[in-house]
Image (tube, rainbow, N blue to C red; front, top):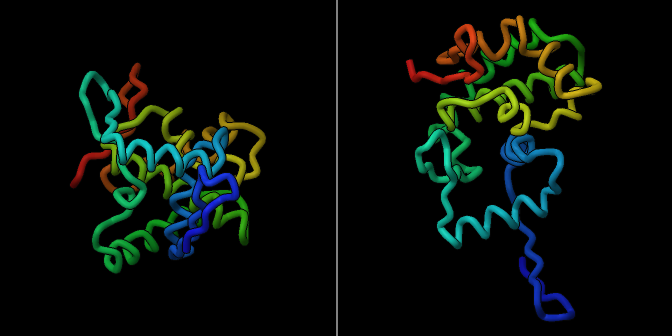
Amino acid sequence: MKSQSEDGNTVTYQFEIDDSDWREWKMTVPRTKSLDTRIRELIEADTEGRIVEHDDEEVAEPEPAERQSVSREPQQTVDEAHRDRLREELAGSGDLLERRVDVVMSMYHFLRQRGEAEKDHLLNAVDVDATRYASRESVWSNMVKGKDTLRALPGVKTPSTGETVWRYIDE
């Protein structure tokens, strides 16, 4: 659905998207940006064919749809098994626990898409506030560092001593 603004310079669009896809995608938006701003940036990047620098290589900025697995049904089954394991490792219960599981799974999907990422990039890719921890560092220390959460997921390689880059290696 589309509607023209009174000034004629902007158009408002309404679209439908599966709730689970929307929740997972919006967790990849840094909390310092509004969803409207991020969507505008994605549209501009797409129309301009923009690329970003990544470790001295040019890598196309992934679109949100690319952050999802192509084969939805088998991936959902695999993800649910991982989610069960995360529920055992993370603190909390009910909706709070589910949000924390969502955050770790979003980090995992981000890492799978990118192939490698620094801690800050992983934290920027998720809704830290949803975890109800006081800070980004608290999220990391309570949910990832020294825990069998992100590092226990298939293909995740923790940084070697003296390094800070997490890697995903397709097994």
